[in-house]
Image (cartoon, rainbow, N blue to C red; front, side, top):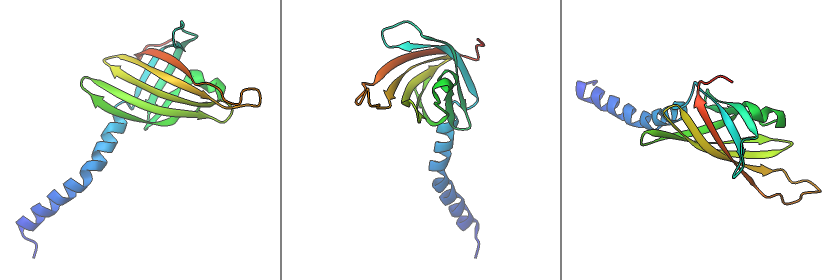
Length: 142
């Protein structure tokens, strides 16, 4: 027998089961469709990359300036922290290693860091990680 009480219970149960999935989609899409243009440089130094275009689309993060080293797009995670959005991503290059990105977006400004874990080579068997800073503005064109 399909009573209104049973239907209401089924709706509540489905809503509770779907909640974790809805939160995951919302967290992923917090920055989707956003584009930032700015500068980056090694920690403690001035910018050595100018007008890098950082994009968040379809759950993927991308740095256009890193294309020349074969770093591609990567899934990103984003969470709301007060009036800011924190994000993380890890891009990988078969030839150059990996970059671990962490930052926040507050208003129209993206600020963060990325650590370059260089790929070992015969002449550099244990390379030290190199930390960089990044600062960009939403939608600005180069």
